[in-house]
Amino acid sequence: MKEGAVNTAIVEIDDMRADMFGNLLHFIYTDSLLPETTSTTELGKHDEAANSIAQHLLVATDRYGMERLKLIYEDKLCRHISLNTVGTTLVLAKQHHCKRLKHACFEFIKTQKKLDVVVATNGFQHLAKSCPFVLFELIAKLGEDN
Image (cartoon, rainbow, N blue to C red; front, side, top):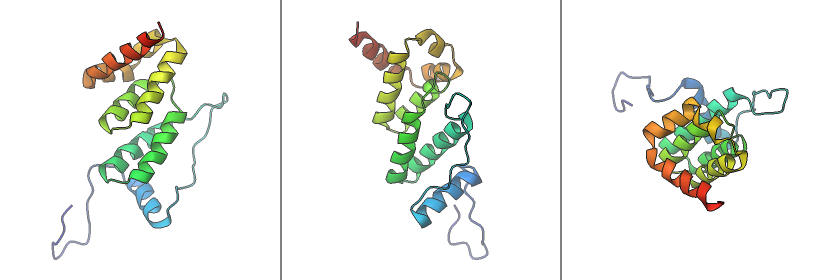
């Protein structure tokens, strides 16, 4: 951000999408979330686009220190973990210090009993590359029941 420039009427924010910033501003000024425009699938599962938005907003709220809103999006992500999103969600949980979200991901993997499916996802490959120490925690959690 360039502040204090005499002739600058525009403040540029390069680290997030405009619609995400609009969501943050809406919350700041109204203390409410924008009406959700996400759809659900025939099976009632959370739409992947909505999950992606929640992930982006979790990152933004952490970056700007909006703890209450961060908790709201952490809760949304906890309630909508899927086999396809659990890997990337675990990375976000670790990077943005969301212990409850990390625990929810571990529990999801433990209860699904489909570790082979989870390991085959791109999100899990991203987890293995960016946060390999989380894998040790996961192995320990999975070993607790055995």
